[in-house]
Amino acid sequence: MQTALADFIKDTPEGKEADAILRSCVHCGFCTATCPTYQLLGDELDGPRGRIYLIKQVLEGAPVTAKTQLHLDRCLTCRSCETTCPSGVQYGRLLDIGRHVVDERVPRAPAEQALRWTLRRGLMAKPLFGGALALGRVMKTLLPRELGAKIPASTPAGTWPPPRQARKMLVLQGCVQPSLAPSIDAAMARVLDRIGISLVKVGGGCCGALPHHLSATDEALALARRNIDAWWPHLARGAEAVVVTASACGVMVKDYGHLLQHDPAYAEKAKRVVDLVRDPVEVIGAEWRTIAPMIAMDRGPLAVAFHPPCTLQHGMKLHGAVEEILLALGFEMTPVADAHLCCGSAGTYSILQPELAGRLRANKVKALEAGQPDVIASANIGCITHLAGGSATPVRHWIELLDERMLGGERAPNA
Figure 1 (cartoon, one colour):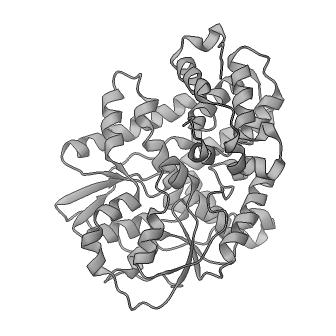
Figure 2: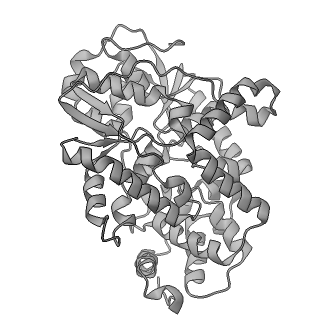
């Protein structure tokens, strides 16, 4: 693709990166076949190729309109197009650059600005979010049906073993997951403790993905630096990894090296952190020889439908890894059509684009429930919460299922 970027951006780091990405696109259109919004809307501008053209026009100095902003807003950033693309176009990074430029030039309506500000502040403030969630659970039956469906039931965390092992790994504490599903990190801690690794909380918080995808770049980078500062002393003392149990957060943390590459104080630290970030499936895969003899195969049959989050299969390229472990645990894996397509959660997308998110969820739930599973498993808190709001089948993180299948594992109340 030929480019002629405008003076305002062509010599900046973002402009040089965008130019290289644009030039790698060969217009083939393979991406449209795997784009969820193109599948729903059938509009070229609601597919990756059309959005690439829109971003190209913006960066070349063409007028920026609310229509441009709308089509970029509709993108889920699922990156399914990246998995499909034969040319390796880094669409997700191009979209971040394009959205930032567009949002600077097209003012949003006051109500929309207020909603986005509230999402950034409310979801990242743990006491505020936790309190609102607790109140929502109490008032759930009085809320509108659609709002009530978004509020998950409370699940006990269970025990978190003390940091007693010689080997240690750190855990990203995140922002919403500790309130929505404290059982996930606790299950990871128990699994690791049984094989001689302590999972340790050391501070930090939100990974930065939420403000990053809402074009609050400076805020996202500040959160990245805060996490690095919290982890760095422990990594220096020998902690082996930073475990991120939400795959959406994992993709963000694994991108710290890129996001902070021009920060002289953090560039090298960010690279080191990225080298040590692990999704649970990477940790379990590396330790499988120790874990395998500890699996209790007498817990009864269980049919599982697995939803691989886009951030796991397209962002981190770990497609199929969790399914292999679930099969090794003795679960019956039910078939799921179009497993590569997004469920519609996508961070704040289900709130900002509820109609499209609802259609995507309905399609995904239908595919997941077709095999009549006993449980739906996933690897990201956003997907888990979103799917649970549209399905009568229990939806859980796969690490909880592993925890229950290990000798000495804690059983969930409904297991």
